[in-house]
Amino acid sequence: MRIIRFAVLLLCLLTTNAYAVVAGGMVAVDRQWPSSEVGFLDVEFAITIAQEPGRDGFTFWADQFWFKGGDGAYIGLQQRDGRNKALNFSIWKATGWVPQKGANCAFFDHENSGVQCWIDYDWKARTQYRIHVVAEEPGHWTAYITDTDNGSRRKVATIQVPSTWGGIYDTSSFLEDYAQGGDERGSCAEVPATSAVFHQPQAENGTVLPTSSNARIYGVCATIARASCTLEQECIASANVYGNLGDPKSLQHEASGQCLEARAGGVAGLEGCTASSAQLFERDDDFRMSMQAQSQCLQVGEDGSVQSGDCVESSMQRWIPVADTNALYHVGSGLCLAPIKDASVRLQACNDKRSQRWRMIP
Image 1 (cartoon, rainbow, N blue to C red):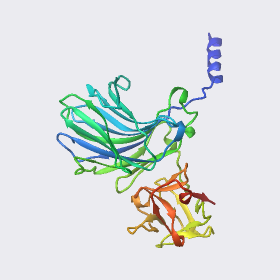
Image 2: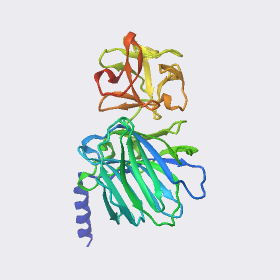
Image 3: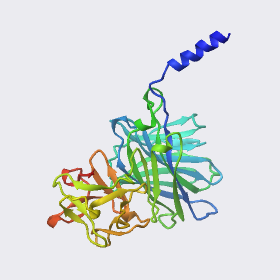
Image 4: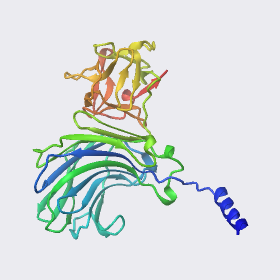
């Protein structure tokens, strides 16, 4: 018997699975809302995916919410692989749905039971999408998505719930890699790099806002995740996107070969690369570009100029590196860093062109 057990153990040790990790959830954003006796009858979420994970995606960026006297739900954008993108809307313990053109609805019995509706939706990186969930009549919750770049609004689906349920009283957001089975990752390091901004949600037609927002990392791949919320309650969620604290580098503009220089209290511009203290930046895990020698951070001023200033928790000091285009996405504006005439720099609509490409060099 001992010999048989040893043989089985040896076989297990020698047999390795090429796909070993189900990363699952990595970032959660918890929102605190003012109390409401009956709950909110509409909530609008907003998200910008700064960097999409590419063909090996299987990524879900979602907002989760709960009903008074009822159960939970979630809605969000998915990258299912390199070709297929979608929006997924699910409510647990839902009783049915109203057919909607283009929507695929069905009952589900995994993760408890309920109704799931999804649509093909070719979302774009660095575009903000607003997702509106509203009770258009008792027990009928309808979802809409708006592309803020072109203003197009699409009805997703209507899911039916028991008429005794109240409104929405609590929400959170999450970043998840849901690759499973033959698509599992060999390790957490193989989870495709991605980053997104969960913007501040609002309820009751914009009249109610959350009182605070807190981001956290969790799960088996928490070590590769980064999460941070700003004073404006814009929350960044990323996987395999790191800073360079302790290793200051220069930010070089690829097209010109010049480096960004930001003197204390001054406007930033392009100069020849010298690795001086005014050209050395460290990106922290809150996605600030800090100049340790000056104890300041790169920010965008009220006049739109790029400058240095005392490091604070504002969205105006948050910059997300976009690995697939080498762009530097500014969280507070939704724009990208680019040079203009006379060697100064400003923010422009992100266009993936060479003029917006930057790289960190020693």
